[in-house]
Amino acid sequence: MQLIANGPDIPDALLQAHEDGLMVFFCGAGISYPAGLPDFKGLVEQIYRLSGTALSDIEREAFKREQFDATLDLLERRLPGQRLAVRRTLAQALKPKLRRKGATDTQAALLRLARSREGALRLVTTNFDRIFHVAAKRTGQTFQDYAAPMLPIPKNSRWDGLVYLHGLLPERADDTALNRLVITSGDFGLAYLTERWAARFVSELFRNYVVCFVGYSINDPVLRYMMDALVADRMLGEVTPQAWALGDCEPGQEHRKTIEWEAKGVTPILYNIPAGSYDHSALHQTLHAWADTYRDGVQGKEAIVVKHALAQPQDSTRQDDFVGRMLWALSDKSGLPAKRFADFNPAPSLDWLLEPFGHERFEHGDLFRFGVPPRDEVDPELHFSLVRRPCAL
Image (cartoon, rainbow, N blue to C red; front, side, top):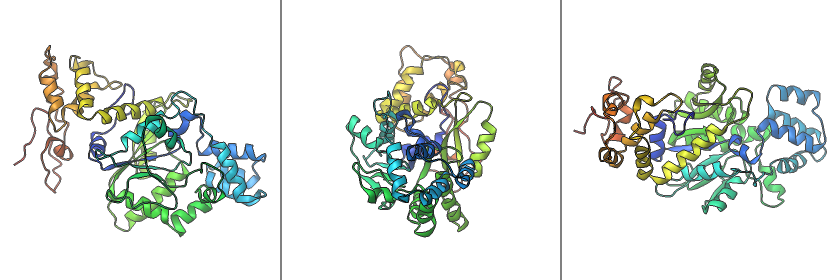
């Protein structure tokens, strides 16, 4: 379902997992772009600039291969003051421009989206910045934070807060906190291979939740370490839910991008960015719209019905699939959005009944949305529509 025109098509299965409290957003550097913060590559470039040094030959080779964690590892060994000198420079490079328009809007939206109906927050980020804290203060939200390596057990009964999986920049000068940041290849080795505290958290998270990555690029070294930990679990016979990622894509590159993401064990939900640009507004606006609809609960779905009931369904397009939004709203198990549609005055067009409501787009995994407990065995032949659907026995 598209939440905005020209936005990514969020699968109904993911929307339902989120509604049921079974999904966790995993946030990367891309969510902080509106505040002027860089991606991993840009961060490395800024660290070198602020350090007043240039890449050595071996560091340049690692950088060209997009091994940014290894680049910083080599730099820490070479610079006077080594580890802490690089980390103090990193803290300077990650000072957000909080006066920019929309600088904290996406973090505020994610804080709303990641909160269960019971009020528990379950959100993970590999960012070091404190923009979530600023967003919470600006919007009157509060949360408990967990900074690496002191992580919670990722289960509903044991977790209520925001996890900074790779560490959190301290509010005031604190060399101990800077030393804990997971940024170099050596840090990643400790967190995922030797001490394995990050790998254990990620493995347990994937066993208990559907994960959706937001703000990561396809070649992000951070993503590589996490997915390697998951692959190791699967080799040992662990069964984990599907992982998704909201990923950018230039027009015409959809097939190639899909293959690249799936090779990492992740199903992409692609959104377009203009060729040669850094315009990720489709991602940010989608998260804002999703958060607003989720915040309003059933009333948010009723608002979708009110907005589109009098439209002609044949006017729905791939770029603005409002029929998909309507079907998602009308399938709410409370029945209230459907009642709102039925009571609409003037009456909606009969064209809604001829195609959208009769299209058998729903499958076995959608039964719960209609109050029908599915059998353990998946029926691949089961397809049904809004007007012709199974009932509970």
